[in-house]
Image (cartoon, helix red, strand yellow):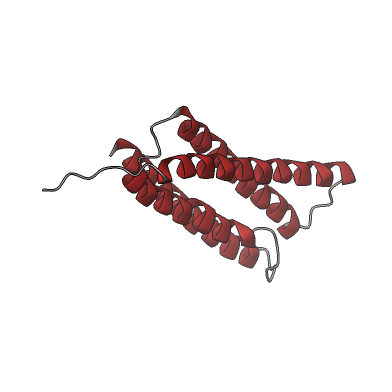
Length: 147
């Protein structure tokens, strides 16, 4: 139950971040007279789907299969969250630069892309860790007591 609560709280955290990201995108672009089409537009959807929705599903799977009973689950949780936050952060970073029409060097542009790539790699690694744990537990479902 403790891990389920943690997963639901994580989903709620990402829901709040997603809403804040959506409001920031809308207001920041409007304030600066930019009609849209920046990397800021990806923050809202990524945080809702890969954050809130993913962790709500993970909470349901935790209740069914007790995924949290190994170190692998802790590794998944850390790697996935770091990857998602890094990815969303680079969308914000690049999007703010786009809205402000800031000239950036090729080196900074490549650095932002590199950091975004690392975030995506961590997300992918987190997903793989999650599925390894899920596959191990899916063949050994939790026994429910009849009441």
